[in-house]
Image (cartoon, rainbow, N blue to C red):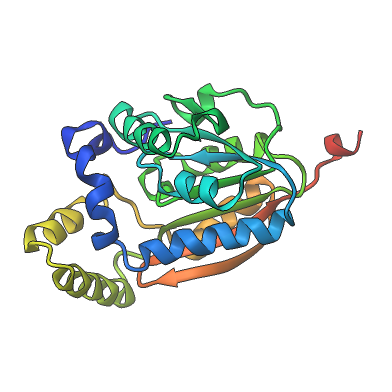
Length: 235
C-alpha cells in the first residue's frame, strides 16, 4: 500500500512549518477532530490508531487534551515520522505513543483499537478501498473512525472554483505562487481528490456506518463514522 513518494524527500522537513498555510482551517480541523473523538469516546481510557502520523499534529493534540489516551502512530516515511517523534519527545510524553515506521498492512490486524484517525492522507493512497478495510480490521465494534481528505471531482466547475479559492488563501498566507502551482501540478498524479459519494461507498463497503460530516473548509472535508458490528463480533 503506497503513499505519496514526496514525503520521503528532504522537503518533508518543512511540512510542519508550512502545512497550516496550505490547508484552510488546519488548526480548527485538528481541534474539532479531538472534540469529536472526546465526544464519541465519552471520557473513557482509549487506544487510538493514527494512520499517516508523520508531522505529529493530531498526536500532539490528543496527548495534550487527554492524559489517558494511548496512541499508535503509523507512517512509512522516516523523515515525517522522525518529525512527529521529535515533537512528542519535546512534550516528554514518549511513553504514551507506539510508533510503526511502515505501511498499515504491515501492522498487526488484531481489533484492539477504540478509535482511529487519518487526516489528510487518503487522497495520497492508491488503493483506497483496501486502506479503509485495513483500518476497519483493527478497530473494536462501534469504534469511531475520523478522516479528512481533499474532496471533489477534479473536472467539475465547483472544484475549479475551490482551486481558485485555495490560490487566494495561500497568497494571503504569504506563500509564493510556485507553492500553489506545485500543488496544482500534483493533482491527478500524486494527489487524488476523492468525491464525497465515492468515499462514502468505500467506507460502507469496508464495514463502516453512521457516516456524517464534521468539518469542511473549501476542498478539505472531514467525516466521522463507526466501525459496524459483524457476525464474528457477536461470537
